[in-house]
Image (cartoon, rainbow, N blue to C red; front, top):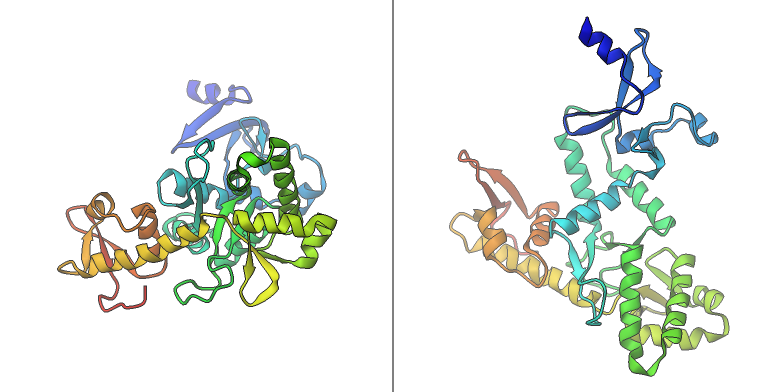
Length: 337
């Protein structure tokens, strides 16, 4: 009886922790027994608002987490990008300037993000009410792209490559992309241009990215933004490696980065090296730990190549009775990397 009275007497704003999830007790959320209810904050709850709550500015029953409303929760795509970068499983573009504030500019393949989110949903069998589908992931990517939160870069920049499917693309946060753009403009400008001129080139390129959120744009779109100085700016951006002409059409440009081509080359080289390493093993499999720590497939992290191979179905993860994880080829006779 004493414990029950203590629970009922807790004040609003007190946090409880259960299974690693923070709960906040709200006085207004009470059941029939007059006991307070704790609500876990999840991304799925944030995306499943009712039409009534969308029309009102803030409902009194809105879920709160540490003083933030539910709309402040980051998206699954952004969380995936951060997770891949922290685990050294993302690809990256190297900076050109030695005084760059960032050591690397990370990005991930769209196919890896989709596979990562769908796999995590399948593993969580206890909660199937908020299961993600490929349609949900694609819709969220399109929404973030429309809001200019992320940028999608064409892997081949219009060039035909069998190893690079057309539906795949590089996904990079817009803030990271613009930092890379700034680095490229500073490198191309050198000591000849002042900081004011560098800022001017960066400002106009930011206007281009704000007006066009897709992977490519045409001359008409450039003229609407750059006006009479279109030729001057486009020539500079072309030299800096930020805009690349489409080989099939002189009227079309692809957004790119100066070191992006080398990163794509590392992806292709790493794919071949990764498969060949497993083919040379006795049973077409190797310990994941040895593969990650002792092998170098390209300038990109080994963790990136492992995730890339898993999402393409080239390899599968196998757990041994001893608790060790092996990376095994799905087909040892594979020739297409």
